Image (cartoon, rainbow, N blue to C red):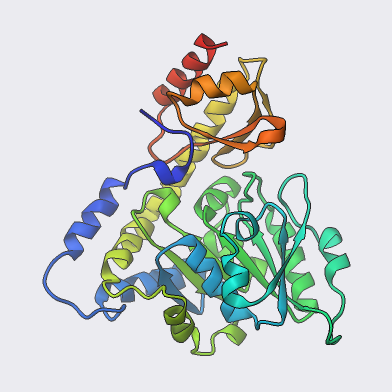
Length: 339
């Protein structure tokens, strides 16, 4: 049965699974000293324009490692109140970096120069945590998108205060596919300093990467920070080989574009049910909607999904690279049966 709970619930794309199998030959050096990792790092540089890249296990590890490289323990990180680093990482960024997260309430998950600017105070004042990073999710945790100009504005604001812009790109592929831009336009072109690049939510088995664009962050200490963050894989070739297949011939963007299209199709079909109201713009592969609690409980028994906001009976549905129109048609039919 198809789940709409998360794109983490999907399986592995066959091409990526094949790449893992093909990497499972002979003995090679560990800890990234292999041809697969070398190839993946070259792909990161060619496709995104980054100066350095590091492959890690998971999203929380990627974010913690990235923020650790950009801060000291007396710094603060500014993010949306809904940001993954604030809500869904069990305090790991604060625990491991020592930094204070300063959150901004937003209706759509997006930071703007206007809502960040009031927090850029206390520089040089020893009693205040020193602002050092603006961290955004692209797309946001609410499935909404920053335009390239909006990211450029935040990067400019950060740089004018001696700060860095970090992008949590767990679903960056969906954002690039939706915007129709190139990876370099969204990363290097916007002035982003470092990015957590996701793979697991879009057809990979395991693995994320951290990409550094600002030469000031390329100090050579990244390898030590990754090790201390417990994100250095001994048999890294099995993660790296996935990235090679993932990025080859634009597979990652094809999968993301498909999941985005499926979200649009789900949005259209949900429009047939007046008892359900969509609450956010559907710009990538996430749909947020308010539906009667009793209905949600019935439907969830067959098609799993999460409640996003219990107070409002707001639920979240995510489509994946392997979602089909038949999956969605069956889902809509079951909702209608239970009205």
